[in-house]
Length: 193
Ligand SMILES: [Ca+2]
Ligand SMILES: [Ca+2]
Image 1 (cartoon, rainbow, N blue to C red):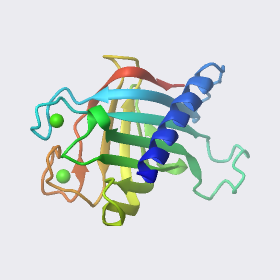
Image 2: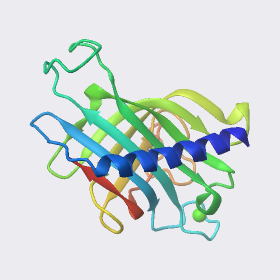
Image 3: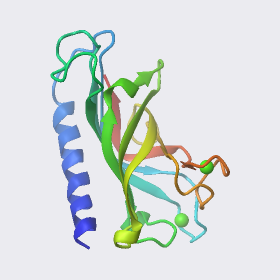
Image 4: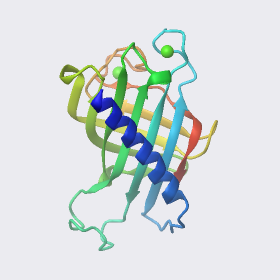
């Protein structure tokens, strides 16, 4: 229960952080990008067949600087953390009968890439199924793609690498990963600057 409460606190803090950052004016230079967001998303379908449409809570706060701009405290050649991502399902969004499914971790700065509408980034973190030590995984890679916008517009897609392949909700069974479907923001927002 403690872990779950900590996760709840973390998501709350992330949403507050994202909201706070959104009030600031930040210049988006070439090669720099800032992604902030927090809220709730919906898959728009019942993934696990329990009669409820599934979705998750999420919090994003990442920034990428152009290598060579001298701002990287660890040295411009070294990969560095670009921020934090957390995504979880519990309470009214619980899935697979689990008390919790939470993915959270640091985003790798060099992994952030984007097209005109979509930002994709990789990270490594923990997966907590809320079932005790046997359901707590560390050093789990994940990939996230987001498009900006508020309810009904912004989207989020999470892939958890190397685990849970084929469990309900996996859109590409057999590839070793947990490929969750695209979620649409139902409350809150995702902002890309
Ligand atoms: Ca469901
Ligand atoms: Ca898969």
